Amino acid sequence: MSNSDTPKDGDFANWIDQKAEALKFELGEKFPVPPSELHSPSVHVETARQKLEEVLLEHEAPTQEFLDELAALESAPPMSDEELDRQALAAGGSDGDVATPE
Image (cartoon, rainbow, N blue to C red; front, side):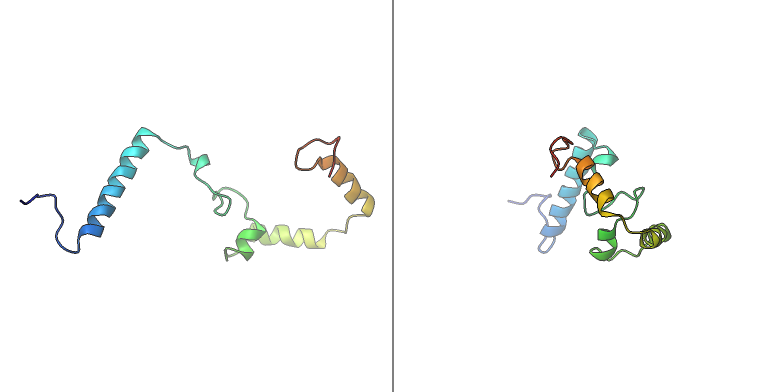
């Protein structure tokens, strides 16, 4: 018994890949996902500002905007302990409640 859809020897992986791509396309048509939901924390949306983690951990080349911002931070005067305390109390911690700072 022979089936015309049966792949030849060695072509099975290729056949699976083709079927998987066809299914991705079909599901993408049925359930479109907005581009804003496609990004992950480790892969930034190209319109966003570059992060330090991306340069250090993911070995991205720093953009000029990133280098300029880094130079501005390095040249800024250090914050006083009072300013750091004020910012910590205003932040509210992980629950976002400024009445219970962490």
